[in-house]
Image (cartoon, helix red, strand yellow):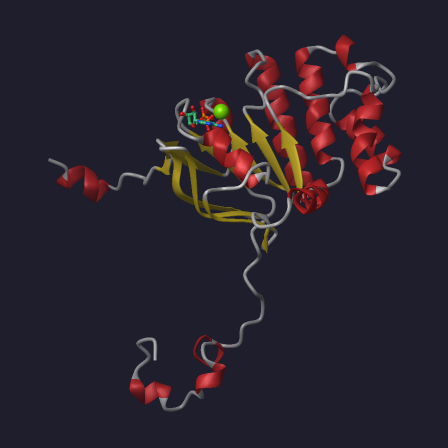
Length: 257
Ligand SMILES: Nc1ncnc2c1ncn2[C@@H]1O[C@H](COP(=O)(O)OP(=O)(O)O)[C@@H](O)[C@H]1O
Ligand SMILES: [Mg+2]
């Protein structure tokens, strides 16, 4: 019985194991907002991800770093339900989503995830405010008040009637962050969100994104090769050739040939 001493086991009815041994279970461990279990991705003969697993907890900021071509965008794409892994499983708030239809995933994604990419993907024919109201249209909710509050929070208060083409690169990316948070998603997925910005704007966008996500309690998975940005995260995961690199231990360093 799981290594439990026989003398003790005799006093514990099997059916209440392990609660009797460790004491009553009062609070279940919180379900991660995002999970990848042993994700493998193959394109023809090439394997791009080799059994990658990770969890992001609610309110936690996790940075995925690694050289170009290591599989960071592929991993984010799969976690966002934008493709299907060759094997493994993806969970959003504990619900397995990789086996759902594209339509079912898209419906869940609106509330579960906010996505931010290097390119802003704003709709050019809609105003700044109009861009923020799109998630509300999909959800059938009037989110005008939230949109106006978010505009102020991202430093675009009073610019709601402007069109994206008159905004600077930093302003567009701040608007993209605001849009990603409109539905108060459980998690924010960002792929090099500051990759096309100068240092000052990159820092402003990154800090804003992380602070707002923490305020809203969203978990964040941030793909970046920018060490300054990665250092803002609670935890870093390093990808190398499609595998999560193991941290080198002091023992491994001293015993290495
Ligand atoms: N659709 C695809 N078909 C074939 N190979 C791909 C595809 N998408 C990505 N790759 C390859 O997968 C590897 C990882 O790419 P990517 O995830 O974009 O890396 P990163 O974001 O870390 O730079 C690269 O070698 C890339 O060429
Ligand atoms: Mg990439």
